[in-house]
Length: 430
Image 1 (cartoon, rainbow, N blue to C red):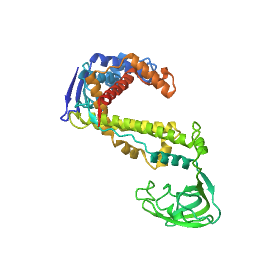
Image 2 (cartoon, rainbow, N blue to C red; image 1 turned 180 degrees about the horizontal axis):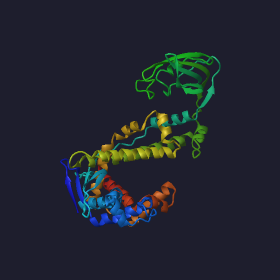
Image 3 (cartoon, helix red, strand yellow; image 1 turned 60 degrees about the vertical axis):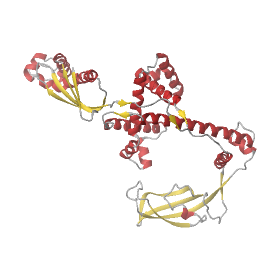
């Protein structure tokens, strides 16, 4: 049996429970068997000491730590189920009484998932973006494609660099005469106006010619990733080797064929571009409408008993970070490499993911409450369809999907999608 006592904010409390004396006795024997090969008693080989003799000589208390490790998890899990609470984060468990020959009494301080008081979540009125693609939008996209097809042409000697040109340079940076790590490079290609270097650096190379040396003076931003350079004035000695300028292809039928082998004329490319832009903007509008409908349903709900427990925020942040770093890992970028490239550390990344964490947690809580209120119970056929969809999406076998995801998790995800569809399909656009 267990006893749950909620604290004042209702989302924390104390769970009192017992571990049956019979389970303690079973745990004692398991703990003894685990350790008997290392027990030395005169007159007995290791592993041959009788259980009763061990108890007489050392007392059962010598095994209590191992017994606790063996019997506590199941007893705690049963107590949580009996109390009907959903624990979040790690509990703080301490013994109240561990008397020999009696049930052990335990006490756990835990945080629990808060209850949700639902508001309106059907037939909501939500703003929907208008989808409109103009000729100017199409021309801008064609222009972007033209820029992508541009060639860099080496300019003749004496040409002054302009914004948009690419200069090939050597540079060597120093602060107060001291050269700093990462401040040197040779034959580096830099597009002027790309804003990829420290503010002010690229502007000072406009007008330079191949063969010239230019002293570039800049001030590192106060929030620069390298703390030893932040806010410091620096001198970069730059040698310009080459100036290259973009040569744009003509906007004609040949250009259209180079961009898209499925079209034969520039007119066809523009027509297809307009169709693609319209589809992309329609999808963006649909996604925004879905987000707004779900947000409205969440805003209409109330978290009962105070704030969301910090443990739930921490769990969300950790999960988001793991997913993000896992995606980078699939692209061949390790966490160490990511932190080195960005100049961030793990704490800084956590702070980024903390933004919006409370909203994400509340959204999940509200959607789960709607699942319960609507009694959404996915069928085995729906689970099978979801498994097939995931297998096709990730190009793996259905068996691999089932090994990675339990039926309970699959049903949870299907149910959550179902209530989102219900919220969105019933929402009215304005």
